[in-house]
Image 1 (cartoon, rainbow, N blue to C red):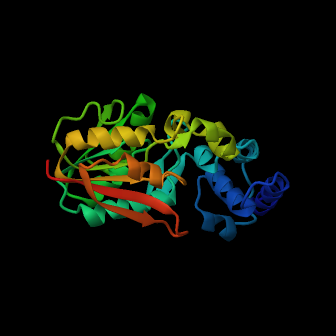
Image 2 (tube, rainbow, N blue to C red):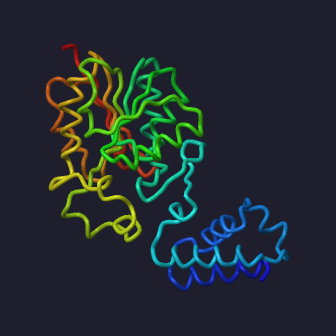
Length: 277
């Protein structure tokens, strides 16, 4: 079995199973099996696969056909130009979340201290720690997620402190200049509308917020007013239909509200500033 033949057969299996982007997926999975980069596949098409590589490739193809996201198979995902380790204990970082990072860098470049709430893989916290001169903390209710984030921070050389807690419950009053979060925002009743790869494989604790989908936003708005210093920023990623609900949760303590759309024009990030208390 040559590299070229394996790639062709893998592509056909994925295509027959209606897996999106079968060619790219086959390339990524074969690279994982061979521990190589994509150019190798085309510069060495006639190289014979060792049996162990073929076995791994077959297993990866089966997992993807069964619905497992490619990122959980390869255990990696790029975010803001860096590679992060991901496992089923954390959400897969999405490109859209980079809008949150960019908004934080634009609005709060001089922040001295910040926290990423619901950090998951640590993609946001690690990125901001490497891009800003701030003390960075990250919280998550999942100890397993904190373990993945801590590993990413160590591997990428980011100075981040980690706390297992619910949202901001362990954060001291008036201790922060910036809160960032991509929180759970799916309502329980919307579960049936999720893609199979998301519903069946990504952690529900990081997906589902409660009956309305606004429950964690409410915690952030209420507790954010406690932990932020005056004029500090709260910057959150928005769910597809959550903008107006989140706006309603912001009481008179908040001002300078800004909404940032993604490349498709969908409201993706909401930023609000704590007024003078």
